[in-house]
Structures are given as structure tokens and as C-alpha cells.
Length: 362
Ligand SMILES: Cc1ncc(COP(=O)(O)O)c(C=O)c1O
Figure 1 (cartoon, rainbow, N blue to C red):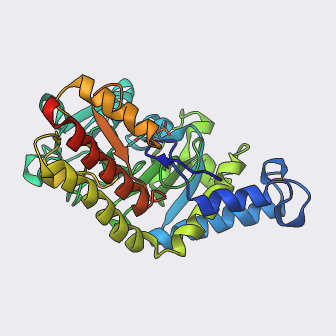
Figure 2 (figure 1 turned 135 degrees about the horizontal axis):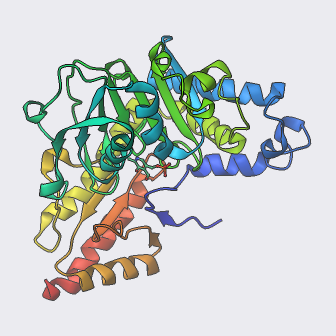
């Protein structure tokens, strides 16, 4: 089997061991004579899978008992809408920190249904840094504060999370379980699974108990957190395939030291790339050093032509997914948990060789 060096931003590379296990179990899961996709979501066997996935996440993230863990559909994007619908309350306001494309999408969704205070925006500076604590203009009576822990497009992350009075909600789609994080500083954590946890079409929601009761009575049933809490994420037919893969990914993570094990290797992987970027004027990082993401490393070359040439030659050398997001251009390497140090070193080696051959084009 040939596996490529896959730097896609999401859907992204999954651990090869997980893919192989899923392949082996596909025709007949645990001797059932059917795949997980053909199994009733109401069966004892599927209940065991969803329970195991939840237990794995709880152990890995050290989620206390006073939080519910939900497996929902609609991706992280549906959470942008469900959060204000359920948790802001009529006539109330919420603080949003606008650090990039994804935080901005969340705040646009919240603006549609009520009042929002933009506590800080990095838009004028092209979203190249995370604010300092004393730059945040927070309201004293906000119902919650919303942040995005890692901006997948801009390549910036919160190294230290802000200290706030109101409940803190975080979109962790692109860095969940990539590093050790104290979950108790948040009242809500959510993430699309398709970067660090499994395939797309599954969102993980971790919600402090009691919050769901804030939802106004006219909230549509499907969009209420309380509906999914009551039915253990089985109100309607869930993405059984994605939950099964998430369970396998959790086991893979636990066997490799969990969040702290990942953090060590992820810091190392990111340093390999940033070291090349910082080593000469051939490369340029648009991002403030303290805000640099360890999941999505973005950089520029001297011209757009050179960037196109770099991406195309990298592809020929077996490295894909390096084109920056269409809204910003440039180059981006997404180096989630499943990306090996060997893949990152191969990319760094390719960059040095490319620089040597094209130095004159600076
Ligand atoms: C940080 C972040 N939040 C939200 C989303 C949206 O996720 P989904 O496509 O699952 O709705 C993405 C997708 O890439 C993301 O990177």
C-alpha cells in the first residue's frame, strides 16, 4: 500500500493503523456478519461503540462528570448557529473574539439572531495574531465569550487561553487533542471531527451540565442541546461510521500517550517547519511568532508564481494538500496528529532542496 504525504487541512490524514483496522473490520464487525454502517444505531452493539467513544474522549480530555459529551451532525458550522440559539437568551448579548475566518463565521451566525459584542478583531491586521488579554473589550454581563482556539486558515492559535468572567466557549475543530488543555476553563468545547478525530460529518460537543436549560422554548427541537442530551446523541440516526472511527482514533491516541504525547511530537513537527521558514529570506511567515499554530503552518514565497511552482513540484514529489486556503493564498501544511514526523521531515528536506534550486528567483 502506498500512502502519500498528506498535508490536507480537513478532511485530513487519519492514522494508517486506524484505516487498516477499519478495512479489516469492514465486511464483518466483531463477527456480526455486517459492517458498522449496516448496524442499527439502536442495537446493543452500536451502543457499546458510542459508549466506548465517549469514554475514550472523557479519559483523553479529562472531561469531568458535570459535562455532557454529544456526537452531532452538521459539522462545527451548525454549532455556530446552535450556540446563540440555545445559550445567549432573548435580549442578551455575547462576546466574540474575531481572530480569523472561522471565528468570524461564528460571529456572523450569532449576529443573525441577536446581539453580539466584538471583543477584539484581527481583521485590519489580516488575522495574523492572537490578542493579548488586556486588549479584549469584554462586557460585564455577557452570557458567554466565544473564541476559536486554532485558526485553520490563518495559522494562528491561542497559546494561553483568555481569563474571562462569563462562560468561555471554544471552537477546537483544528487542534482538539493536539496538546494538553485544562478543559475546566471552558463551559463548552466543540469540534468538527475531520482533522484530529476522524472523518467529516461528525461534531463533538462538550457542554457543562445545566447550560442547555437556557434555550428559549421556541428553539426547534432538533436544534436544542437538551434534545440530544436526553437521547444520548441518538435522537435521530447519527453518523455511525464516523463515531466508530472516532472510537478507533481515541484508542490510537491513548496508545501514544494521549494529549501530552501528541503535544510533544506536534511541537517537534511544527519546529521542523518553522526552522526552515526562519532560516532564510526565501520563505516568509506572515504570522506573529507567539501566535504560530502547531497544526496549520502557513508561509509565503517571493511571488505567487514561485508558490505555484513549489506546490506543483511538491505534489510530484508525493506531498499533497499544500495550497493555502483560497481566501488567503500562499502555502499551508496541516500537520495534525496523524501526520508523522517523517512526513514533516520529508517536506522540510524538499523545501531546502527547492530553495537551493530556485535561490535566484527570490
Ligand atoms: C476552526 C474551524 N471551525 C469550524 C470549521 C467548520 O467545520 P465543518 O466543516 O465541520 O462545519 C472548520 C473547518 O475547517 C474549522 O477549521
